[in-house]
Amino acid sequence: MAKTVTFNEELWKRGMFYHCQVTEEIGLCTSLNTNVTSYYFSVSLDSMETGTNWHKAVIHCPVPFDGIFIFTYFARDTDFIINDGKPLFLNQFVKSQEYSAKEKKDLFEELSDGRVVSPRDVLLNKAVGRYLWFFFEMEAGYKYYINRLTFRFSVQSYTQLLPECFQESKEGENFLHRFLSVFQTMYDTIQEEINNISKYFDPNLIEENDLSWLADWVGCPQITEESKQIQRKWIQNSFSLIQKKGTVEGLSRLLTLVTGVRPAIIETYQIMDFYSPIVYEEVYKNLYGKDVYSFLVLFKEGDLNLDGSLKEERLEQIRDCISYYKPAYTHSELVILRPYLILGQHCYLGINSTVSTASILLLNNMTILPFQTVLSDK
Image (cartoon, rainbow, N blue to C red):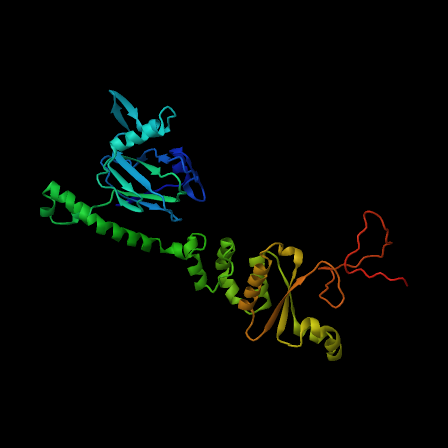
């Protein structure tokens, strides 16, 4: 039965780094330095079985890069070699500060079972043994990201499923094994995708490149590209949001999800019902409009962080949300409430205005007059 081991942050950190580092979010990455070649040397991967056939390695690089990196690997049944008549334990050799990166590279290349340039999916031919080591050599002058590294081993070769006449010649069997491995790895890749198909439907597991595809499935418009986390939350709550689509509650929940602030929503008919037609026509028509099938969405200016060049883009995204989730054939308006009272504008007690007692104006160094102040000599 095939087995798989995937490098995580803990496994990465067991190795030795030269001019590179590992992070939880990215994996193995390098700094942009035109003068220094980066190296990563692994400690052994232990399959717990002697004579293990290491089948393939899959190297996932989320960001394309122009530089060249070299992947070198070898396998042995023991975790040491005899060097100058003495045992040299390879894991201690890798972690030792006494040896330079060049000395480690030279020894790994001497023991190498294979050396591949910039691979993404590589068959580990000739890698037979309980322990597997590898190292990356990354060309100077480029930024590298390797966020996932997966090894497959103890895979049953397709040659073992053929009649014995195809296994009699060791030389022929070796060629046939390598030839069939090409098709076997293609089949294994497809089978792995099928087995892990659920990752494409889980907003917490799906990769960012596929997130927009899943968002389209659940009716999430592409308006939150600057925050993938918001888009993931939208997908997580898509079922309950769709159930409430076209309602005040549904729109309020959606905007709270996108902005982090719960808005106030006023429907025009509520104002019309409260006042007589004559009063509404004279006083409130300019604020709330004359269409009974319209509504206003109110946000306080300070809640949306609208400073800077992204102000208009942010407001446009909120308008798109409102337009997407509002009832059909209704008119909507986004209102940003300023933190002061202006007669004839949107002023709501306890939201963007307060009632206070009168105070005496003192002209001193601490006094300021807001722009809406009116001075009179009466």
